[in-house]
View: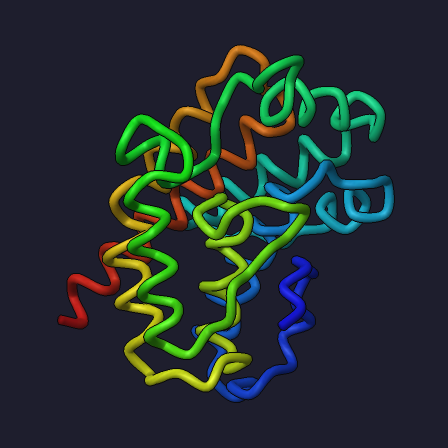
Length: 205
């Protein structure tokens, strides 16, 4: 299955459910921004992000301002420094690294086992393993909007086992990284959203 991250239009198998559509779009947006640096067109779209008075709305407003003031070539260099680097980037956006201190470790194996049990074929985007933050966000978006034929509880399961234990910490690190300018706002959006997701699942239990 093609898992190349794309910004969702909101038209999906659950188009009538605004909350679920919003969740899927948020995960998809994070997936796009963590997979590669945004180009000029995406930056223009991000500059038009609507915001409300919630914490996530504030984060969206900060991201919109950052996008409006960003130069594509500078953001591309920032992405390289943060996530690629010469040898390695400032941050390693992998579940295995955050949970086990090493790449391709047991957390990745557990994620692959859970995806296999749910009938989700091996996922690769840009050669990265499935516990890369971008791929994990895209998997969550796909679970929510019905692109995978999985039980309704699959997003809760993957979130609880493979997102909640580390992704919020990664976004907090991204928010605080000295090399981050535009991506500091991406970290803020991600941290707020993961926190909201965790609280929602807790209250729905």
